[in-house]
Image (cartoon, rainbow, N blue to C red; front, top):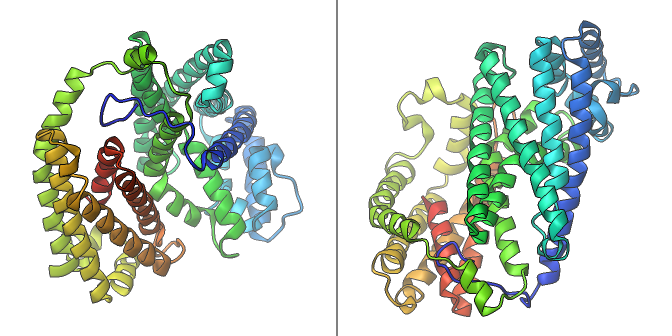
Length: 466
């Protein structure tokens, strides 16, 4: 089922299906592993909540790590996951200052009720990973429908209970008493609300027998819950492959900077893989799934009619920021709101390269113009596919590729995250990679004449340019 039309899009015989299946298996195993680690961490923190002795031991562990001592076991204080991180990174990165020892100490020093509530939230998140990892595998749903429903029921209870626990913790705790203060407070509230809304939308769609919508909402729901495992795997990657003097908090800047868009894209990827791998449906079954969504179609058409205003604003911003007044220092109150190292880094990498900036701006403007044509002809005028699959479609794909390549180049030049430059080049690198992938998919759909995928992936490329 496409997001752009109520047309079944089953392609079980596609080339490279084995690679898609392999990626899906690896991701499922990674989530199963994280589920075990999260439950273990939740139990460890549950036992240590509000415990002065545990807090003292964790403070001593931090001092030992600062001295370079990695001989002791940290599993007793932070679980098997963080103990694995300690063994595969430097002591300072894992449990030194500006590292994982600080939230571990915070767990042990916060009021016991708050620590217990947050630990339950963590453990239930692990349960979601354990019972949700296989739910998106079409063969599992087809061969074991009872197991699929049972796992789904457990997942629903665990996910909603975890979010209720998060809301209780946030409601009972002042922002100043929350680790990482406003950032964690806003992020956890957004996660709790987002997971709850998508979960109940999925349940509603299931009750309405709208299977495609149910799958889409569940994929988005699972993607939001992936913020925790993706963040932990990101910490591990920076600890294993980053500079020896890097602190965990520095790696966290880069991971957090791309975390939400990355997990949303993973959720979309799960939905897309499901559509690729599911078996072809009979005509009767396809007709049942492809229900008309009148209200959604009207809303989509309205948004498409308003899109030229958004694209115009994006074009003006591009010209202003990359051609007329390049650099962050021209933004009002930049010195008060943006770290000096971030401003200097953009000056060194982006402002200093006039030709690259001009290429980026030109490609963005061409892509926005082509995108406006695609949105209007495909979703407002509802013209024949040939109208948007020729010049405008290929221009959008080419422009997206150019923009993505420039972003990747800038990201690589900006380098690793640090206390001075915060995320470093991570956000540019991530944005460039996503834009390149979606532009390549758009070009593939254009070459194959698959107009439904052209509309879907075209909208994503436009979103990247905006």
